[in-house]
Amino acid sequence: MSIGVRLRRHSVCLVTLGLGALFLASASQAASIQAIGYLPGGDHSSAFGISDDGSVVVGEANSSSGNYAFRWTATTGIQALSRQFSTSTSGMAWDVSGNGAIVVGMDSPGSGTAFNATRWDSLYVPQDLSAGTQAQARGANGNGTVIVGGSNEGAFRWTSATGVQRLGSLSPGLFSNANAVDNSGNVAVGVAYDSSGNGNAARFSGGTVTSLGDLPGGNFDSVAFAVSGDGQYIAGRGTTATGRQPFLWSATMGMIGLGNLGAANTDAEARGVSNGGVRVVGYDPGSPGGFQTAFLWDAAHGMRPLRDVLANDYGMDMTGWILGTAYAISPDGSKIAGYGSKVGTGLNLAWVAEIPAQVPEPASAALSLLGLASLLQRRVRH
Image (cartoon, rainbow, N blue to C red; front, side, top):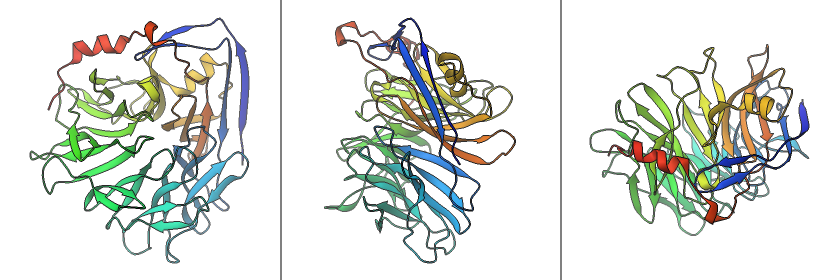
């Protein structure tokens, strides 16, 4: 099954004031959205990871013989990845390396709720990373040589030379988990618990675990889900006095809240961030109407439903499309992967969308609205 839309729109050049740089939108702007479809006998699919050029998308889909991790390209369509175990009934791909060659996720041996962190190589052969029980590989770097994730034993970093190495936590013996890694493989992000039992959005690098704090107000509870390919910007969700909210963090501006689409007291999360922190994607379950909605954020426009961006900014006919979650974005901000459903079905359908890439102006022209705004929100809690 495949649904494709591609439109071209001509408009006056617009200058967008972004994070650390000015970004210029092309006069001739193209956008598209493509349904990834289902495996044979299946009726749902969800996309979680995308390669740097947007040509490879990975995720999870069901079939007549159970759930599988999948890999998709426009040429091959959706393909189930081999399982580690003959008894497996469940597999999932969380991420793909920047070059599209290595897929990471988890596979279940089929007994109880056990998970094994899994790496699929360029020939799609699965490998158990031996990272402990309840283990999942959540992120891969640019060439797939560094993999991060978590298990019952905490956050880990894996390479073929070192095997699994534990990344530690904020307090000895307390839980941690790594959700993503930058293209260099040197910066991982996730969550680490402190001695008070609070979840802290965390940065793991060079043997050090650093808390990123939390947004002002509310109970202390934050987690990082994504890091930009350049390793400079981190996105996730924090807790405010009025509910959970997506955040964007950098070493220079600290943590800032990105707002919500609708009512507060939701579990809105940022799940992907482009280089320079220019674009952030995620979902907000408390958007107007009470439906979970995929969002796109930038400094000039704030948080907007991605469906509205495609329809209003690029003139696309979005009839029949429900975009519930945006889960990943390419480093240049042009490719976005996620899942939603077709109107009337209620069944998850993975998709990949394309919008014009962010084009940075010279650094001398850079000026950050959010850098200024962050001064007003500098009280990041530790």
